[in-house]
Image (cartoon, one colour):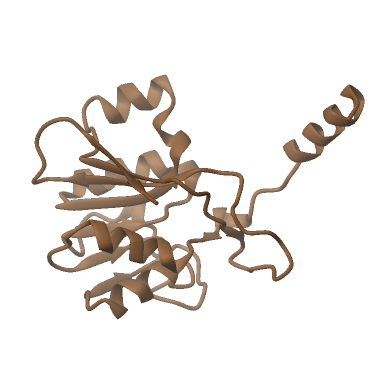
Length: 190
């Protein structure tokens, strides 16, 4: 590939439109992966439930789940802006937040007093000086469960039958646990 062709590919990739409201469906297996590694006691609030991909797995595993979302995608209680909520509706919060609001979702979850906060995020969320200062220094996660293989999140939740699996982005479950003390632990999901 020539330099000109490579530059055109990069430009096209940079022009990719983000899904409206940052809706990228979490593969249900990812919720199973989290529950296989984390003990969750008490109810769970899924504040960005989308179409219920995470919530339905949590429920199928016997958890009591309150599902809300700002946007009505046919699951849970719509038109609830998590960042405006003043009361903790369940002791645990598990979600795949809109990435552009992930910092605010985490800080708000912690400010509400959640016992355990589990966020499905890009591994690159670990980067950034401002995030390090504002979030990770005062509130380090207890554990980060890193996927050794890439996960495919479909834009708008619409799986495409003929497209390859194994996306281009590395993901992890970031867990804040009020019962944890000490340094963050790094674990892998193989």
